[in-house]
Length: 231
Ligand code: HEC
Image 1 (cartoon, rainbow, N blue to C red):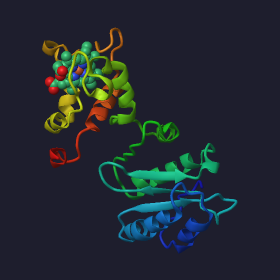
Image 2 (tube, rainbow, N blue to C red; image 1 turned 120 degrees about the horizontal axis):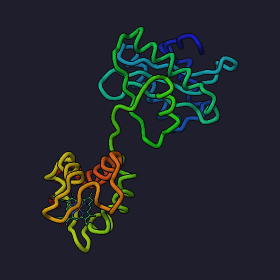
Image 3 (cartoon, helix red, strand yellow; image 1 turned 90 degrees about the vertical axis):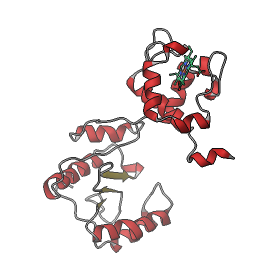
């Protein structure tokens, strides 16, 4: 796979393997529909670029795929079947498609957000010259941050406790922005007895990631639509 991978364009050859032979993490027909209805038409329109990964010694078996997507947020996606993890295969593919992105397609910036827990994937990105430019909050870790730092006053699940009220009330959350919540967590409300980021638990300042995570957790309790709360 040293050379640039072949463009995944006239791909019934590829798609037919998806159902039968691939240890996909998704339902097989979901993958089939994804390629038939979305990826292949987007390739035809010149709007996306997809490649399949195959081993040199058994090119008939598809072991993974990688794609490039224009736009501001998420420019690259990939997956690799579990049995092939840990061999540097995806790193090789990432290097090749990165070159394609910059040298052939002439884009200037490539962004690839990923779940924070996906450390293997982040290492691939870092090895291939990317760096973390922003870390959006993760509401799952945020629940733990809340339990450790806020629950003593705001009660379990933020529903109100001995010394402070609810922070998950739906009318409240509908009215305040994430940025406002962030400011509260960082600066505190000293006049009301809500500590700043250094003093939720004595001697244990929150990290930047913990601030983002706990805000993401509170924000995840916001009703999807303001109308949803009225009944
Ligand atoms: C020492 C107790 C204490 C701790 C710990 C604490 N708070 Fe508070 N918090 C308060 C008090 C008191 C208020 C103001 C009265 C109220 O809302 O009940 C408040 C208010 C708030 C408000 C509403 C502020 C407003 O004006 O809109 C938010 C949001 C909030 N806290 C979030 C948090 C988060 C997130 C944490 C953990 C990182 C936390 N609090 C930790 C005591 C605390």
